[in-house]
Amino acid sequence: MDIATMIALAFLVLVVITVAKTAQIVPQRSAYVVERLGKYVKTLEAGFHLLIPFVDKIAYKHTLKENAMDVPRQACVTRDNIQIVVDGVLYLQVVDPKQASYGIHDYAYAAMQLAQTTLRSVVGKIDLDKTFEERESINMQVVEVLDEAAKPWGVKVLRYEIADIELPATILDALEKQMRAERERRAVVAESEGERQAKINVSEGMKQETINLSEADKMRQINEAEGKAREIELIAEATAEGIRRVALAINTDGGQDAVGLRVAEQYVHEFGKLAQTNNTMILPAELSNIGSAVAAITKTLESTRTR
Image (spheres, rainbow, N blue to C red):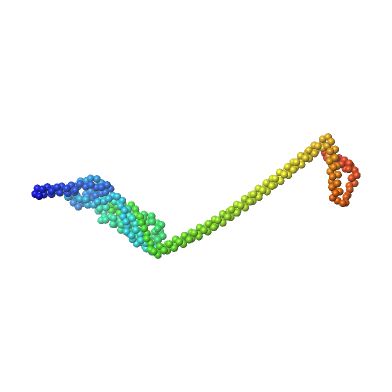
């Protein structure tokens, strides 16, 4: 290879390197921090950009997407001196690429360490039972402290989630016994409540039955009373109607003679019955003159009618 070819190749390589140093394409949701001769110049957003070759350089590359980081497991001591092991997930997002580049050396590592220390501090203020009930409150307190500390770093702390809480074996055994005792207590209470409700239902049923029986007996007595009253009323009406008709019959022609005949027949009939049922007979003085007795009765009826 002659010298001219070598020079041409060297020039071509130089051109390629120059173009590579000059042209920069920034992906979507990314930001590049540019330094010129070691000093910050600008931040490149998504798109095509041209730099001064051998003068400008890409010092830092940041993604503007939300980033999830695992916070390593760590031991925490609760207020009632119970040691638990907690791990979680931290969600960050770069909002200022310049501050994220020059505000701190490694914002991810710093946020992770601060999350661990903050979590230990928060857990140390509450009892063991509250660590399970107040997970959301713990998460919010960690996020509040981290977000305030990360502002100079150009980073936004979005949220922190406790992934798992591991308890010592002795504590797990005690909690299991406590839960078993609580379940047994609830079962006894539920059974007693059931028996109580059953007795209440039975007593209510007996009460309702007694009320229904008394109401039925009351209605029966009312119905019987109404029936008897109606019966008396009908008998009275029939009796009055009979008396009225007898009175009308007496006032007709021959009515008094018919009454006299009827009275004489009844007199003789009853006297005959008396003779059949008794061995000793007491004869009235007027027996020899039945006609006189009938006449007397007829006279009495006539005098009653004229009054």
